Length: 132
Image (cartoon, rainbow, N blue to C red; front, side, top):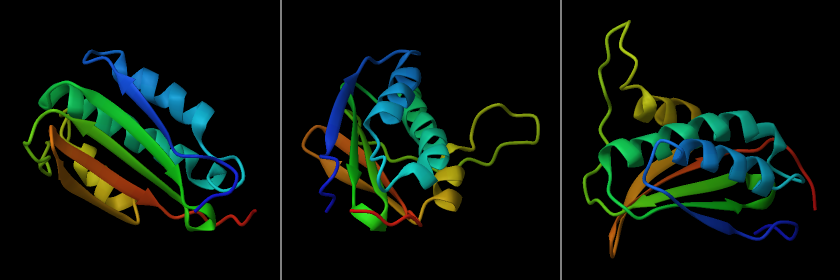
């Protein structure tokens, strides 16, 4: 557990602005002592998972960020739908369908947990940094 940065949560609107809100929140809320080395990957994956929640999920949508110290960052995006994300098989020119594949490739681990009101998609990024 991180002694520098407490876990945080953001409720988001179910609209096209949600991914932008999530990226800004992540930029402000990430742990500067441990998570700077994974911030670019986290920003990309947060945008993908929140976009999936907006397009395929149901309200309410929430983003949770937790620093695990030198072990990295864990992020959860919950929404009100029980439908699990699926790996897409987009064509070369398709604009959508790569989000889950990106999460699978870039994260150390990821999964989907049922919640009382839907599901939470989570992923963990391993940080190579050390700190308090």
